[in-house]
Length: 266
View 1 (cartoon, rainbow, N blue to C red):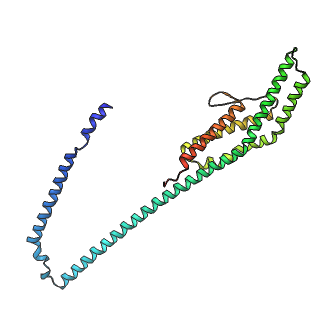
View 2: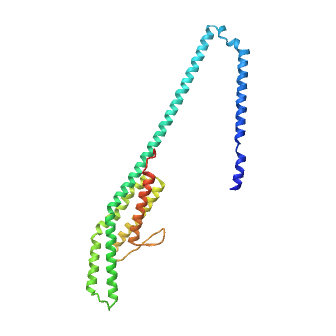
View 3: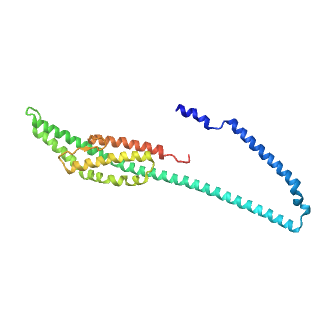
């Protein structure tokens, strides 16, 4: 770092050197202009003096002047056309960026609305699973403990009741698991902002884990098939999955508001 800092001034022209060069160039231009004016006055003016022109000379002068005016007009028209085209391209670029921003924000909003409608069902599935898991654990503990005061019939009845409650939402739970792909499909195609897309992918992953847990649990019941997170190697429980869903949902909303919520023109 120090070596670069010492080298930097050697590669730059000092301000005084730049001004000296500008003065030399300006002085040279002035001398050339004076010399040219003198040459015109001494050598060429007798031929250019309008008093010595004939009709053909005046005609040629008019044609030359007309050509200069025409060339100047064409140059000015081309310049204005280029500026108009450049301005139109800039406006088009801003409009396209604004349309893209709105489309991405709308896609994230659709995902958010769809998932919000399923939050109650997700919480209900998780609660009913844990109610059954506790009743099942109590029944197993009671059967292994002969000295327990709890009647076997009441403990078994409680487990059966919780099992029936858990299976009562099976159809809706499987529908939820199957709908994950459709919910995220539009957003996956539309969102291009890198930060928002990364947060969207995290939320999508959490819902895929929930979908897998639902399918394995209901399809293979009463055997519990844990979900293994391939990125961490950790066994995930329904509570951990729903917590990650809530956390990633919040982060997605925050990043979408920060990155897409404001117009690029402001």
